[in-house]
Length: 113
Length: 112
Image 1 (spheres, chains in turn green, brown):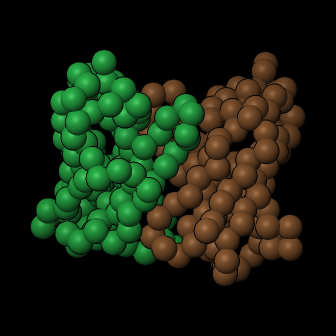
Image 2 (image 1 turned 90 degrees about the vertical axis):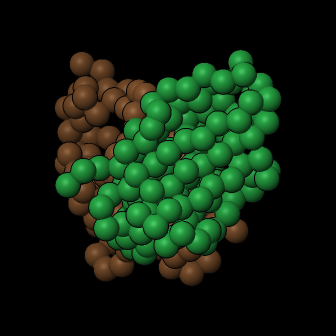
C-alpha cells in the first residue's frame, strides 16, 4: 500500500510570508503527527490530529497551526515566517494507537530567506 | 515529562564488527520505545519497537535492541556492521500519549 506522502518536497519562502505543507497518511490511518527537525533542536513534536481533532500539541508558538480533513489528509500552516523556521518538517501516520507505531513521510524541506 | 538521551553524537565501527548505539530514557509508567534510522535528505525509517514482552526485540536489517527496565535503557545492536548501515539513528519514547519524544540522534559511521 502507498506510504506517507508529503508535498512539496522543497520550499523556499521569504521572511514574513506564510506557508502550507500537506501530508497524506497511509490509507486507513486516522492519526497524523507533525515534527520539526533542525540541526540545533533536533526532532520536536508540533501537533497530532486524530479524526479531524487536534489531540496533542507541542510547545510551538501560535504561528504554527494545522488541520485534518475528513479523508485524514493533514495540512500544517506557518504564518509570518522567521529565519528560524527553516527546517525539515516530517509528518507521521498512525492508526491512532502508539503501540502500532508510526510511519514517516520523506519530509518537506523549508528554507526561509 | 519524558526525555530520551543518546549519549554519543557519533559511533565509529569497522565493517564486520558488532555495533551498539546507546539510548536511555526517562518516563513515568511503562513506555513504548522505538528506533528509527534516517538517511540524508530522507524521512525516518522504522527499525524496531518495544511495547511489552520479551526484552530482546528484533527488527529490520538485522538490528535488535534490548530493553532494560532497571537501567532505563534501550540500546540498539547489530552483530556485524555494514558500510550501508552508516546513517543517523534516533531513539524515541512514546508514553502512550500518541506522540514521540526523540533523542538527539547518533551518527553511525561504518568504515570498510
